[in-house]
Length: 179
Image 1 (tube, rainbow, N blue to C red):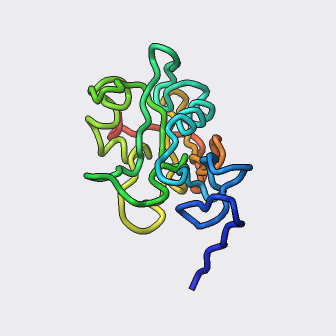
Image 2 (image 1 turned 30 degrees about the vertical axis):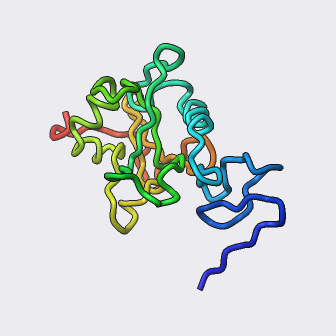
Image 3 (image 1 turned 120 degrees about the vertical axis):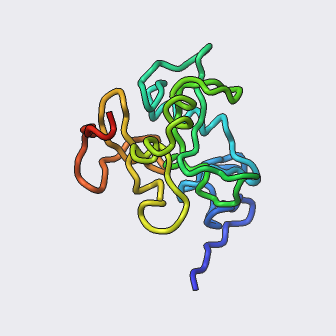
């Protein structure tokens, strides 16, 4: 049986692992386990800021510059499912991508046109991670393809950074089936 650490009096416990959130107060939003939760709800402002830093303020698929007037959307690689989910990793940095596209649910930009309209290709490129067991269902292990550069990278779930893929090839070479 795994025991969870008990937070010190006056600190906030992470909902995911039970550990103490880093920092001085209850408003800290990022735990060392990768959970992006405050005490009850995800802090989307912090999440979007960390995604923008990781992506260099650009769409993580096409590389289009994002900013005021073209903010982009947060994409869950492993879908939340109908009605949401209670999984603590759903809002971890490894499961999220910053993409260009309409913020009001329209099918535009990479979020709509490259991910939602061709989910099989999106899964092959790591932009969608299926539910289930095993390493193919863990967003921390499944690399994504940065389409604008062809690089294959893993998304770190704690730091706003890219990591090398675990399976070797650092670049994606399209085959005839994917063109």
